[in-house]
Amino acid sequence: MAGLNKKTVDDINVKGKRVLCRCDFNVPLKNGEITDENRLTAALPTIKKLINDGGKVILCSHLGKIKTEEDKPSKTLAPVAKRLSELLGKEVKFVADPEVVGANVRKAVAEMQDGDVILLENTRYRAEETKNGDEFSKDLASIADVFVNDAFGTAHRAHCSNVGVTKYIKGDHVVGYLMQKEIKFLGNAVETPVRPFVAILGGAKVADKLNVISNLLEKCDTLIIGGGMAYTFLKAQGYEIGTSLVDDTKLDYCKEMIEKAKKLGKKLLLPVDAVTIAKFPDPIDAPVETEVYDSDKMPADREGCDIGPKTIELFSDAVKNAKTVVWNGPMGVFENPTLAVGTKAIAKALSETDATTIIGGGDSAAAVNQLGYGDKMTHISTGGGASLEFLEGKELPGVAAADDKN
Image (cartoon, rainbow, N blue to C red):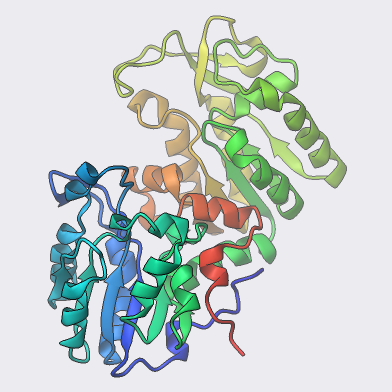
């Protein structure tokens, strides 16, 4: 798989060099406070390595989406610099600059000593960032001799700060430790898994995971489908699914995938029972009454919102003897405690297996961490969309832009 042979921070010497390091500091903020620090702690090993080697470390990242000028103040990276300074035990100087790379930044970079760290303002303050525009790519490149990309969460997008900049920085373009770990775990799991290899897909929409389903069917031994997307598969088999989530445009696709599994001799497991509700909770975590029905006996006026006890047993059994498990997407409406039972049970089953367990970012990563099983997993991906595209077998622009090892 592309990416398994990329140059890393261990392959270069950055002493005395200006190192632009693209991190993923796209963290959740509430009233200016960071509510989840996973992405900051994930970036520390690479940053520490660059500091210890005597580089002049210039960190950059995006934060959220910026549609108007009014969005900017709430999307500043200032709180990140403050918290990073505490985590590193060393000042991370935040350089506020509306241009991201303007006079303030050029001055700050010129004054840096070996081992100093500065953080640039949110790269999306510049509209060209997401369009991969040359002007901003050149600005970023003008303050650096070497480029390190450690932001797996944006690796599936070609932006200035992760791809465009590599066209103009003359020195090495390498990946950091976090990127290396993501490439290794996700790449190896899909390309050279220790078998039996079980893939678990959940989440709401079939449409989001079309290529992932198809690609994983070719690679895994057992594919488990839960979450909202399972109901489209059940309907494709002729079952009544009540008012459950469904994508009627994907029924034929689901039939094709069921056929494909048979043809390839793969196990495709679908829910055999469902936890149903009469009306969707508002707010989403409000108390809710549930009834369990077998998948072939669901009433027309109820909505399936979690996998039932028989399905929990079926899916947990499938995981028991696995040697590699990849999980992406919750089994139900896990934001509601009553409808989080299935997701919790799968997390528990994974925590009890001796398989290599890889959680593919996004909602499943949030669920595993919230439920307290994070430290029991081999690897929790920091990228939602990026890990999905990786599991599809796609080349990620942010990975492709790094230099290959000779």
